[in-house]
Length: 126
Image 1: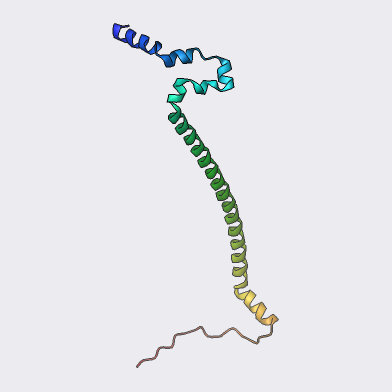
Image 2: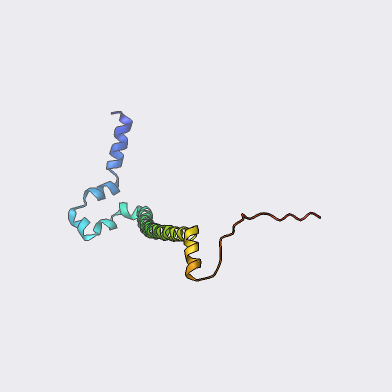
């Protein structure tokens, strides 16, 4: 190590804040007295910022989980509606078959008949 780095290390270790932290015991940590040490008092704004960011992160996570739950619920509902739509479409296709239409007309005795000639366009010339 160079002289310059040794001086810096000794300067840091001789600092009152470092000495204060070295004298800290487990009893101070458990009782909460560690927060009255000068190091923590100087860093109070940073600690509050970190705590605020943690709360924002937790809130964001909860909101995301709620949205994911809602998306999952809506996807299940969409799938159910797709099945209902498919069943309805199948029923409508089966009703629109010519044989089915003829049977319904006969059941209700509407006295309709199938045309003998195909349809044609009427063109009027002026």
